[in-house]
Length: 406
Image (tube, rainbow, N blue to C red; front, side, top):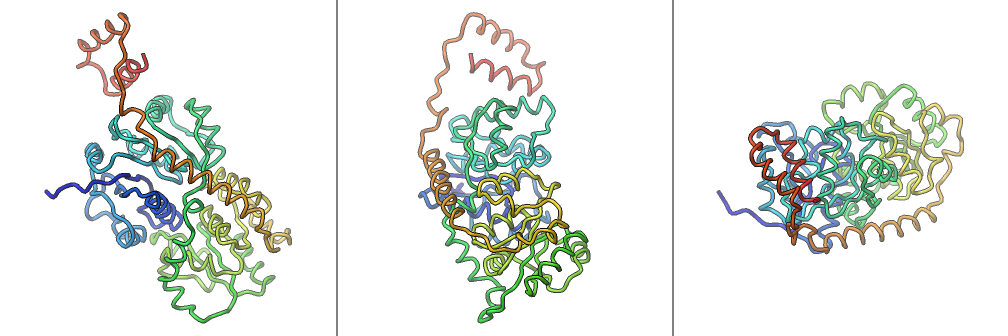
């Protein structure tokens, strides 16, 4: 075996799929941390085999070209990651959506990280208004979160959720795509197939990014295109297994095939108007200063849409029924981005400062000293040693945490 490459920071999260927004979220976080001078690696998806389809996604293709990853470890081997970095950052987007994170056996709460390793989260999201976990899982998650050196979340609703569910008040920060230097996206777009195909073309166009096509959304797209007198370019969900079904459901000319994330960026950046049902799509419309309509997507977590709209005072651009578009001529008007750019500037500064300060701070548990135990606690620990072989692993972890708090 070769020598382990040591990094300053290792990032874990949902980067390995073909969701274009997720790919950019983790690339942005990687570039943001690197911009502070920390050598950074992304942790590969635990537990996958060499023939897993996740090695064929656009996220994987992009990773091979743009950032390093650790070897793949099985879940019971994740402790080996402590040899790779001194700081672990739990990444962004819906990593704390219980329906997602429960599949990762505590890894998304950094249960594998040693006590002397720094543990942070940056712009984590629950995706929904609740954690929706059974009581035992909530208690176990609370103990894991208490080990963190710094916790930040993406949505304002997540601040309330964490306070009410875990008794922890996190910082609210921007999604990494807003916090990083936006020039990184310009560099990616220059390499896109779309940029080459449209080189020299000045033709305006309406761009759509629809994850879940319906007849009502299809009719809304046709209506706006007619009102704007613009040709359309359609982008669908990046998961290849959904493409043909979604293509058939949308049933419009102009659907881009074999879309790469660089093309996705290009079309949003260069369009004259965007219609989307994606929170990521709306985020990049805001970042690029584009007029847009976002159709809220309840199945993908409405708090994400509501927090984004509220943060930038764009509530009127977010609707929850595609049929509303024909009744709202104001939705077709330009957006005055002056106030939005000021909000972004202020929020970007605060978010970057939070992350930089936490990366620079000493590890909270590094100098941990075992406190003197009371006679009662000593007796409890003596009894524990006798009963230990009969106690479950979960109960052992709870007793250990109790002893430390004492």
